[in-house]
Length: 352
Image (cartoon, rainbow, N blue to C red; front, side, top):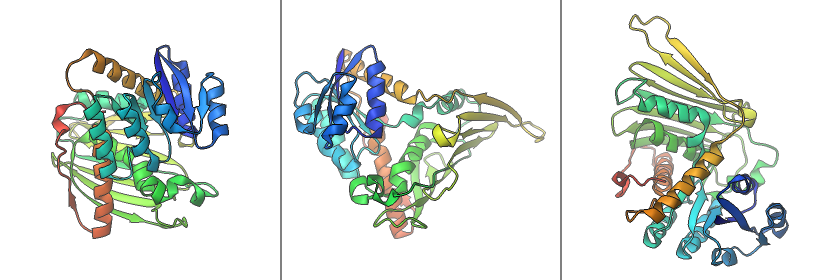
């Protein structure tokens, strides 16, 4: 049994804890949170240790893996301490606030030969998984595909200005790094490696001190295809809509969970005579199994690292997404296209 500790007992930590408790190969052994009462509530059902001292948790010799689900500012210190103590780490997105912080985490994982995985659960949502299968099978025609576009947002909630994710000191930015990083990761996962981008950020409504509530991004891939992204905290009716078009048709993904509606995928098949495409519709259960599937892949990476003498999987996807977010903020500030250099380790194939 893998002994697991969670640092950060908020909403995401609670979701992660539930997945660990349902696992037949892992057990929750410790929970740390600055709010001791919250740590105790999460630890109670698993009969795990509860503490407000995360440093003592990462130092425990009986802990094999650590889930970091704190506000982003604290990811770098907690994750590096865990990696240096010989623990594998699953860290929520974004991996860090800056590329420099993410690089330090990435380097620590490589140095200590431990798995560092970034929490991009959107990759594992049912309609995204099915879309990936169709892409890989060539359902939309040859590469490069033509264009990718996404609208993703919600309208916030009362008191949103007081939440940590809207405080750039704690989160690293606003809607771009909080929600947009998921979409930037999906551009890479489904569409192609970005080569350059143009972005703009705005604060239309919310009285945030230093964070944007809308972000717009135009991305050109290394293959010459184009991607558009708009993420918003002034989308008064929740929306998650993602489309990809190629020579032979298109895919349209809608819904997610909760107030976004159930996940749905439409596969449109272009006809040679250009009459209305034939559409195949895939409906999926509203229950979200993405967290479990992501956890299973983390466990598989740990097992692989023990069995293989090769390179240990590392946080490349998180580092790359961080690079794209930072480039987008720079583009918004400098009002110009930003070239995206290829990361040194991008071709090694150990992306987690």
